[in-house]
Amino acid sequence: MENSPLKTWPESAARLVAVAAGREAADLVIRNGKWVNVHTREVLEGYDLAIADGRFAYCGPDAQHCIGPDTEIIDADGAFMIPGLCDAHMHIESGMLTPAEFTRAVVPHGTTSMFTDPHEIANVLGLEGVRLMHDEALLQPINVFTQMPSCAPSAPGLETTGFEITPEDVVEAMNWPGIIGLGEMMNFPGVVNGDPKMLAEIAATQNAGKTVGGHYASPDLGPAFHAYAAGGPADDHEGTCEADAIARVRQGMRHMMRLGSAWYDVESQITAVTEKGLDPRSFILCTDDCHSGTLVNEGHMNRVVRHAIACGCDPVIALQMATINTATHFGLERELGSIAPGRRADVILTSDLTTLPIDRVIARGVTVAQDGEIKVDCPHLKWPTHARQTVNLGRDRVAEDFEIKAPEGANAVTVKVIGVVENQAPTKALTRDLLVVDGLIEGDQAQDVCQIALVERHLGTGGVTNAFVSGFQYQGRMAIASTVAHDSHHMIVVGTDRANMAAAANRLGEVGGGVTVFQDGKELALVELPIAGLMSDLPAKVVAAKADKLVEAMLDCGCTLNNAYMQHSLLALVVIPELRISDLGLVDVTKFELTDLIEDKE
Image 1 (cartoon, rainbow, N blue to C red):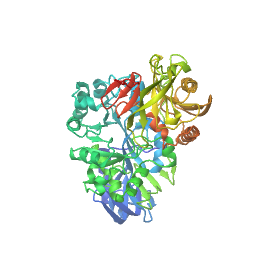
Image 2 (tube, rainbow, N blue to C red; image 1 turned 180 degrees about the vertical axis):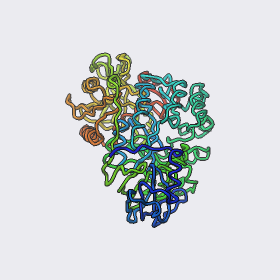
Image 3 (cartoon, rainbow, N blue to C red; image 1 turned 90 degrees about the horizontal axis):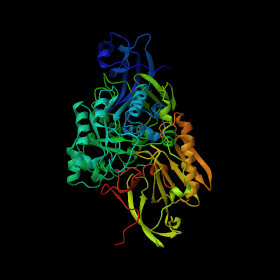
Image 4 (cartoon, one colour; image 1 turned 30 degrees about the vertical axis):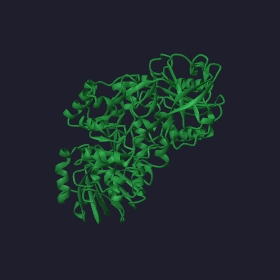
């Protein structure tokens, strides 16, 4: 089936009025359903929906007057009719998929609108990469809006990216047809300190009448937080507890609660609504980061809504947080996010509001998925050759590149260690005592300490930053390497053996990017991500199968963390506390400064 072109409201207004009045026939009528009205928080039984030109024309008790000889009729047979689900904040690249394949994966789960921030590819390909993501997004049969990335690099002076985003880039992008606002403002210290570049990007967005995304990844709710709120971000998704959620909405921000593949932040924050009784209109659900395995095996926004309900949220309120609240936040309440006249005809038929099975998905008036199967095309863009040639190691890595030399004469040292926290984005700044062997500091599997390295891959400098990480529980002689390394997207290599670390790094150089696991010199799993070293244009099920083997390989190496790969990929994200790694060194994110690996005993 061909995708239906969407007409604007002015283009379709006359026909919508005529259909609602009964003077013209609708394209589609859905009869005998339970209308879940997210404007009034009602469930209205025995209602019909009439659709014309991809928009709702009539929502009422009987649409017989809208039916003509060529009108398609769907008998809902008492099913609930809910708005198509919206993901308010997400990164397509985290799914390891292109926009087309990501869309193909989520449509059967009921997602009909996505608000995407392609700052991953911005770090690798700059404004051109953003434009490529934007252009492919506009080809899709659902609503895929793009936020212009704000921070590449995410923390200037603490990392080096392949490209930088400037205020001039933001001004240019605000004129593109699919740009909905500014991506998450991760450089929160820059905003707090009045950095002219950050404020210029925010001003350009507000001057364009668009929404500024937030990212305040700090537990400090004192003057710094208030300064950030004054700087203009309209939302935030980095909260991890109830106090974070309450603080943000009190400052007039929309608070986004995320359930991604590895971020489980809904349960600890939704109590602001379910127990404290705060107005749910200020709260929004999102995923942030979902890899392909989660999308294929568990779902997308339907998974988030089900989880919110399981955490005690009223089902219709949870639906509001994934539909109308999102649309309102981005200034699109008259365009999508609800079943009401004039809106884009995005509607899901489901038999149950709590377990939320997705029986049929209609987007822009066309059935796009039914019983878990997609029914429409998701067009691909032709990605340029240079977008597939972004891994430049300069030369092959060798085991010696991953050596960490100890101070002269030392038999043991105290080192700073990045501590992984399961199911959360923040890390812990730990210290551990490690032995020195032949002048080199060694990891310690008994203490769950292995090596981590950040390998430069944009300019071919040959640079390698070495440090230590704890929490993965790796055993034996192994290594895992990834060119997905939020946000600078160099290459992160974690391992217990330097020769395996070198082999894993070289393998990714050979295939043009991705993720690989080596054990005892043999490759256990490989996910090729040739586009910018971040994405595959293969179908989600194929990529998910490769990702499943990746999970199995990590388990074979001793790692039992939930979605450990997502934790791995964020170890270079130098805007989330407490300790991270970059191409410039070890980063103390509580102070936003580089720090020494070896602890000073004095």
